[in-house]
Image 1 (cartoon, rainbow, N blue to C red):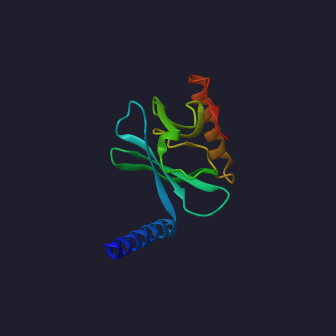
Image 2: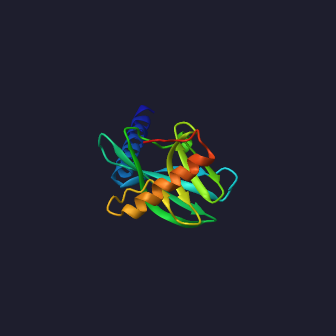
Image 3: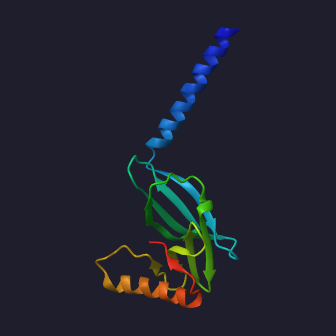
Length: 151
């Protein structure tokens, strides 16, 4: 009776080790979906790189009605391993969607459904895009003055 138990324990342990190694070999893991309040079919999808580093990248894309509105963009780096999107909240004002991190006032991403402008814009080679990105945050801040930049 003891021998089958030992064999099952070894097989189970090796299976779990295999699953862990496989998951770590993938370039990303899904953190999850953060639905925009009052827009039931619109959400930010978040993923994180699977690399052993002091800071790993978080990326996001915007989805609405099952369609990709914006493809994957860099959001930020973090020291934490995230597997649950509950540290994020999403809301909207008119056509402007915004994502907050940690609390509900630290904005880490903004996307305007009408103009397709986004914040942050990490393309420092295009001054026009950077200005539009900054203007987008200012517009949001004018309507909700308590909001602040997460980074």
